[in-house]
Image 1 (cartoon, rainbow, N blue to C red):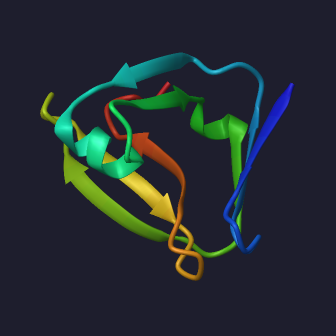
Image 2 (cartoon, rainbow, N blue to C red):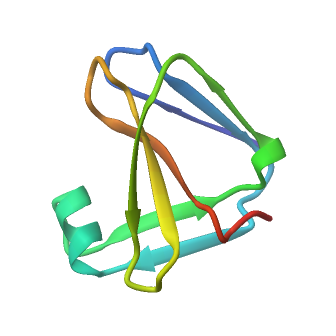
Length: 90
């Protein structure tokens, strides 16, 4: 199975193959601000199962756990398309 994420303008596209290695739900304040909801949900895939096409801008922050979290944004539509946690290299 493949899953595809795209930004609203279509210039950034991320395709994930197979099943996620981990699915997480976070309710920290940073995830609430990022999503505009009471929590954020993320699916983590192995790097070799993810293919990105198009240009992205990066935003990195330190999570409450101490891990660095990097989000990939479409620089045109200014929407998050994908992200990864550097300690979760599966």
